[in-house]
Length: 197
Image (cartoon, rainbow, N blue to C red; front, side):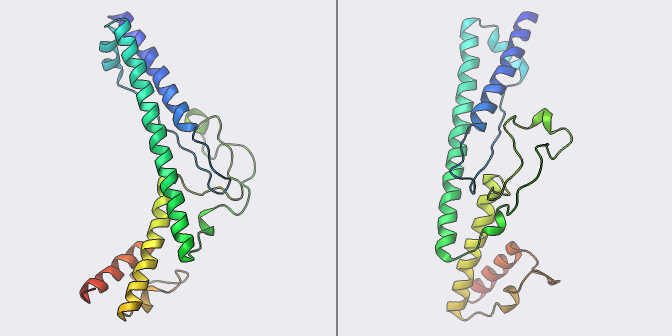
């Protein structure tokens, strides 16, 4: 049993490493739309030990799980990238400015921005450069979608003659109730609903 547990722990580390490498290998389409993804997935050591006791079949099962997780991770990252590209295209068709979502300067140096980053960040990590996304793909997608949704709500409010001037003011110096894009969008939708639109 001890040997099986030891074998399982070794395969746990191998599967985690394989999964991390696969999910980190998603290439960016351009420097402007660069992203990094690192997902490490592994079964608990006890489950691996039970599987490993099955001999060769158990070993094959472990590698099968690791390969499956890596494939799912890569497909998921690819789909998110595709959705980000679609959202960017939609925002650009509306004339929405997205430049603030990208770095407009090179971050100096090559050190990790966190004290213990060497322990958990991918070895391929480099400081962001001009044109790199400030956010990982999932957050980037959310940032773009809130802007496109808000644009569409503004257009609907205009068409319905609903006053939203108080929601379309710059954030700088603003101290009102609607101090985020999300709050403003929710309020626009409330006003549209109240007007039966």
